[in-house]
Image 1 (cartoon, rainbow, N blue to C red):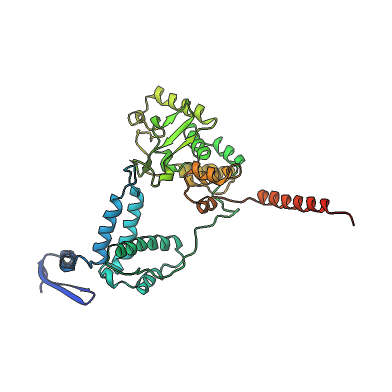
Image 2 (cartoon, rainbow, N blue to C red):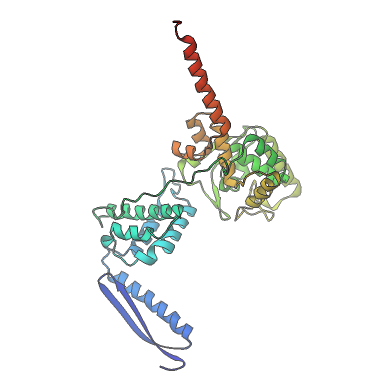
Length: 370
């Protein structure tokens, strides 16, 4: 219409309904495009207002589901889902689901549409699982609310969790743990000692407060987790809230670490953090990643992440304790999860094969002479 006057049209097709807006906009082309985006959002809001509340669009319904999940508490009044889990749900919805399916009415969603959504995500099994988890939750909630009589989820098979190998186990043996501990600085050595000898998650260790630790009783109570620099009240599951034993040399190391903080009047003393940043705040990221990478590289060990220390503890613990004890200590809820954390070494396989041979020989020795 002119160098500074634009005729802007926004059209939104929602199922069988078509919405349009026309508007004149003065300014640059960028101004016109920004106005068009605002008009599209206006149309979506209009549709949501006229859409029957008992049959909302997936966008509206997903918002309701997230709010419902965020408010869920257990018998102790603790949040059932951690903030990190809710954040992941919202991210998966906004990135992968709602741009494609958000304008569909929940009652009209079909398994074929879900299959078409997941099909292009080739080779990203974890992403597919995450999307499927969110959609399954939405589908079940829709049935519970009476919006649907059956699930809109298709019967899809997604390959299982990543399997670690002997070549890339993300796990150390006892000797390798000791070598790493002697390669890093005292601060990080104390952190790695706690991770490798208790099986805690990085978020749990970086969220530890001194009142959680009883050096006389040699125990630590896992009451919270650190998520991106924010201390959350408790870990995400009841199994995560637990008391763990501090075996030697942890009590002595932690006591020395505490003395060093007091002597230096470390700023972390104000919050009572056991392992704060240099500024005294909770870690926002995972700087231990770099520490472990450099240590393992210098020693010629395979790559190890902070979570690999939890896998290391789980793997060593299961060799000396039964499954129920392992799950109680590390906070697993199922045998399958404990198995996922386990790496069966070649020596273990040889030992097991040797025991089978011993059984065969023992049976042969007992056979009557001909």
